[in-house]
Image 1: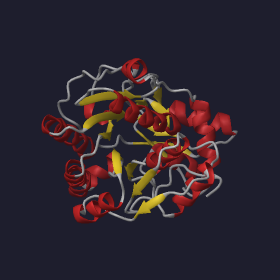
Image 2: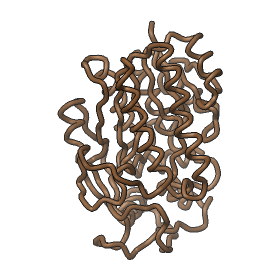
Image 3: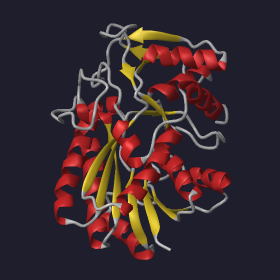
Image 4: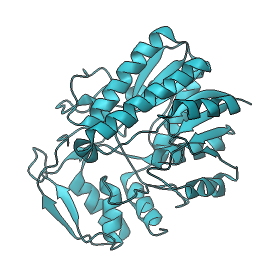
Length: 333
């Protein structure tokens, strides 16, 4: 049986996608260098699905080691998650982000071409739209300039894939995520940052658990109803299901490259999210406001109608459940 390779498959979105793939009967091979996760996630996936996970501790930037995986396994399709993903951190570590996110993709594409992979799903981001003022935003919005090195790596990734698709038969789908949050209903897998979290919800949950003394909301003077950033928060399981749909879509259609937004289509402020977390979990958070953070967009949310009409996908899980599941996951750590 042919297999799907999931790079970064023990990470946050990757692990949830492995679960969804396995639950459809797909055989999955995972490549992960464990920089932003732990090997124990594989056992947690197995507890959820009842199926073993084949894992190779390989860095995607190591083309030779990656080729060995393709030689050993019959890989038909690839989902590529293996990238650094924190906007703020990318401002401080731009070289590391360009090396890992861009060089890693190029290394993977050598293997995709050499081993005649049928389809590739690329983990992109709404950060490619830059500091837009046009939400809800569609896929045809011009890609001009990102405001963080992370966003730029995603723009470069899409440009590389556009050129790659012109001379390679691999079908490519780029999925532009908005803001994934929450955890699996089993509370066995979730977002597990190593060190101080860069993303909002892990910092919220760690503050609620007493691991962090105080949450800082970066900026309360934006041109939004409550002064805080507005984002489109999407449950990670909804996001993971879109990857299964994307693989099916690519293999069933004569495409070269296609792009989809993945979001709820609802813009919610950081303050609203924090207040929702407090309400649904009956908790009070210690939080304060700080200065704006470099690289943060004021407000953005998705028009995800293309994904609904073409992929047959739409979100199902509410913000209340996102916040409940995030807290349930934190309590297991």
